[in-house]
Length: 273
Image (cartoon, rainbow, N blue to C red; front, side, top):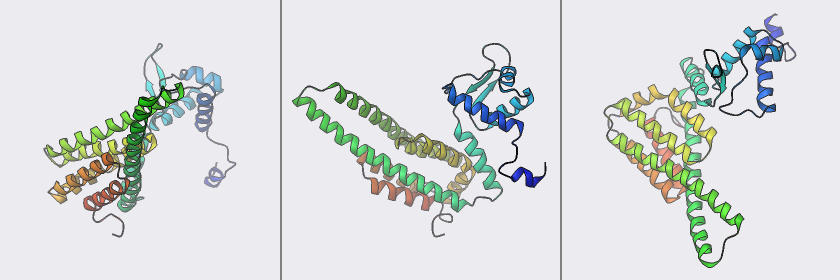
């Protein structure tokens, strides 16, 4: 097959690509979810009518993408288990493209800015709304008996509020850990924890996966930035402002603090540079 033929939309896909598509169909049709096990190589090959080498290649691709985790051996514990690690594949992809200069640091920092400003503002807004709902529900409970629907809504609100509170508590723990950091690498480790907790506070799992990939891919650059700055006091002031704005429910202040923070950390890679 020539290069032009491979590029044609109607070109026949390679065997393992057909297997990938068929496995994807099986996952959807069978309602499989994280933790479920795929059939073994031989069984998949027989079911899909392809060679075991094609199945093996497709499973390797799925493992690289963070969709399955393969376990060697025989018996009930062997085979591929569905997992959920989208951040791993995103991290590897971003690191490679940064290394090849396909992506510039400015593009990556701009992406972080958009994501983190949205996450900080959303977390602050959600925190303010949760506080208002809690106050309203407390007043309602004092004046009348609650319906089952109201109780269910309260339980859901309480669960979301608890998740957000846990995330903001982790932000505070990360700030304390950065204060006690032994060196730039240690500081960056806890800095990553802070920003991931910020993303988690927004309640969007895809945002968390993308943020984890961005931060892991930029780890070396982040350490260099801390070394260049020398004094991390300004970064910590930024962290505290972000955390305080989210706890206060001030979306505008939270987004502004994120922008100031990234401009301080990467002065040569931010907007307008």
